Image (cartoon, rainbow, N blue to C red; front, side):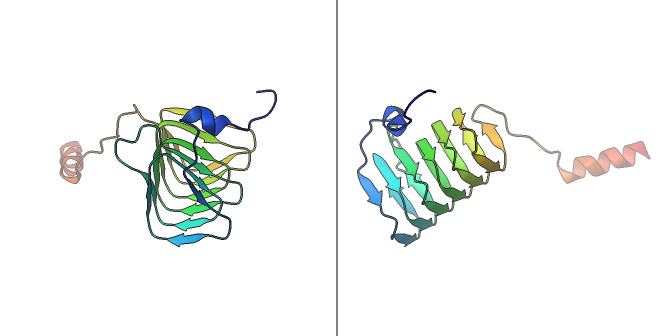
Length: 144
């Protein structure tokens, strides 16, 4: 709370960044990773941790942009993300985070200044079940 926030991503997982997408990098297509990935550039596509990778950490820098779905155990967002986010363990939204999409989480930390245009959905929340159209029609007929 007081002091330097550097290293929070390191506490989320094993702390090692194995892949760096620099600020001048632009990727069109999905990215699959394990370990740590740090995105300063732009990804136009989904970013997904490999199945079974429980220590994977995705960090989106202030200058980073992702336009697509994101799925990883640990996610740290400081840049812009346009798409749904699925953090199976923990997500941190930094003060410069700009997320347009739904955030599915187990644990969430949101700093003052972070912006979310979408819904926060806890991972244990049951899915809403809407009635089938036939049932609604039958209920309307029974009421008449």
